[in-house]
Length: 495
Image (cartoon, rainbow, N blue to C red; front, side, top):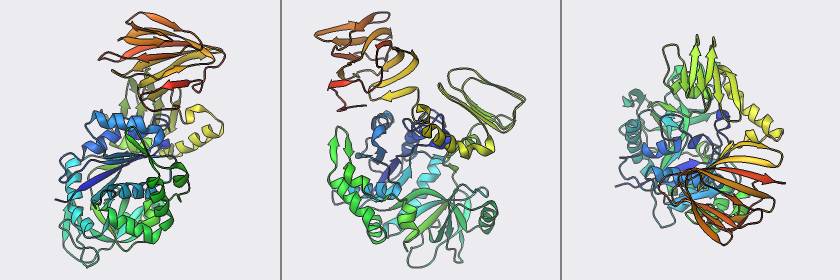
């Protein structure tokens, strides 16, 4: 049986879904469709795929604990979680994964998947993957092309070579069958690629869709690890050399594999499309029509969300009167809409977005401006996730700050101290084991304690339910960098 190793790419920041998606907690970790995050759904849609092996995950090092915890919750045990010290686009990320897959001498098929897409028909996707295996095994670099539903100008397109032949079907869409010797024909229509084309204007996109020869570029691929590495060596040798060096010098860190920073920073940044697929003679495309969506904008999410008869899609505590074709994403408070058409409203604890639905691609410009002005809302949520749980800064002022802290069952913060602040802890629910200098004691609901400035302290949850507490900090400096760690079960020197 052919072994298929999924390569889950989880390095994106998802800025076009700001303010919900931000660099510290991007869209792949969000439950945008259903109860599971997009990362979790990416793994779960592979369940039942013949030959499925443990995945290799390539992620931003800042997201390492979220990746590990979210996959653990859906029963995924990666063979490696590879941490990128900096983003260098998809060609280097896939190169590192391919090298890692070949480290033991094997040469599996790699199923390369962005971790932030939606596919409405998981069973159909598994069928499509199996259909691509023959071509991948025989040396093709297969990409999954999406049968376009309209003249979309936000995607790149793939033009398939379509010699005459009988039509076959994947997901209900007829596409021509490939003939020739370079890419062997399969039962369901893997075809040679004639060209990759850039995002078109509206008129060009309409012509592409009318021709039937063009498909959206999904960014999903299937090929042998050795085939990709050989083509990368031919087309972009500097990328492969840097990937090899960064992996050779990588360091194990608990459950993670940290790429060497200096080597990876020196790697040219390029996508697999530019580095390999547009240049190789081994590119092939399998068209699929399975309800794919890259959730690349708020309007894209509106398209796949459940809508009422007036086209409104709402999440959270939302009330709308006389509205049509709106998307409202509520947070903790009530959101009301009145007399609006084609509007997007997204409410978070520290930022509110109101936008025309046809302008949401420009959200990235708002994020760029926030970054230029040094505003934390560009990258950081008020609620911050840590390997032990999370904290939410609910209030603050000169010389004080109030946080709501949640510690997961069995988890523990580091043994630490602060030079500039003291802390008061009040347990709201659950139980807390507290270390304060040479004392260790237990707190339960409605009990509190005081941590003096300069004291070594630790907070642990010895129970089986989350511990929730309110922390009141007071002092001359309240920044997160005022932490001196003495011990940490997660191996962190800093957050």
